[in-house]
Amino acid sequence: MLGLLSGLDRKNCWTIAEHRGEVSPDGLQHLLSRAKWDADSVRDDLRDYVVDAFGDPAGILVVDETGDVKKGEHTVGTQRQYTGTAGRIENAQVAVYLTYAAPRGHALIDRALYLPRSWTDDPVRLADAGVPAGVEFATKTALAAKMIGAALDAGVPARFVAGDEVYGNDSKLRSALVDRRVGYVLAVSCDHRTPSPDVPVRADLLADTLPAKSWQTLSAGAGTKGPRYYSWALIRIRPDEPGRHWLLLRRNISTGEMAYYRCYSPRPVPLAALVRVAGQRWKIEESFQTAKGQAGLDEHQVRRWCSWHRWSTLAMLAMAFLAVTTAAEKHRHPTPAGLIPLTINELRRLFDALVAGAVATREHIIHWSTWRRKHQATARECHYHRRSEDLQPQLRL
Image 1: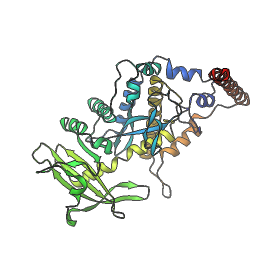
Image 2 (image 1 turned 90 degrees about the vertical axis):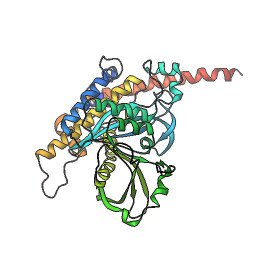
Image 3 (image 1 turned 45 degrees about the vertical axis):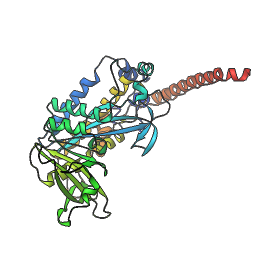
Image 4 (image 1 turned 180 degrees about the vertical axis):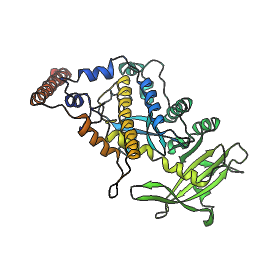
């Protein structure tokens, strides 16, 4: 944990072990692979820790996926697939995450690794990666629904769920939330078919029918440059069903670019409340940025199922510690005039410098330089040997 909270440029078993004064990464690799502990139980403790600090009746569960670009094909879940991290199709590993967002702060509370069919249809590949028996193919929205359900079953106080088009376009996820009487503000695509008295209508075509007086200018929350103002409109749909269902429309004031949301609440709420939830969806992007930039979420060098879940859980816990401690410090010590409020990035730097501290002697540094070079020499020799064996049949020809 101290290594994950450090200022290391790259965080993995090698770099953390050296930073914390270990003579080799063997102990950390044992922790991630063979040691006896339950990552899901620690995940539950993490969720309770975040809720204890940030829990609020107005809390929001935000779901999204993120990907890590990988080399090779042996890392669990890896294949060529689209990842928003790269903005294109890459050889990548993708996982779905859940963030809890409330007025006092936000942090990741759950994770689920996405296994494409190229993995779930290959029992040998699953066994080689240590995937437990019984794990079957599940869509990203199914993984999201399972995590949301687990959080609600655990008593996490959440009034709404937010997510992007991947989740908003899934009718099963929306229906599951309605069955639980949990509100949602989920983005949908422009060609999403919206219920109407006659036939379903595309969301963008329905927006074209609205008069100018239907639009209101409201802020979706504060951004780095101040309030994020957009024009918003709300259309009631499915009036004969329990609760309130709407299509929410957002228009960029400068460019006119449109965005669309399917919304539900078990009871009437004003437009401003739905706009606030829509603006909270970006909290998970902030969570990804913090967990990757400050706690090494994406820097693991592990290939197997168990190791991935353990690393991601510990990185999420490090990120939650930063978020909770930053919020507590800001509450105890109001920001002096002339300074911006304490940030998570700044608190991590202070913690690393004033509390954690690195263990580095001349002998320790030389030992690790020798250890790395010896390990790399062995790896190079094995690589050359395998290539030589692969080339033998061609050379004989």
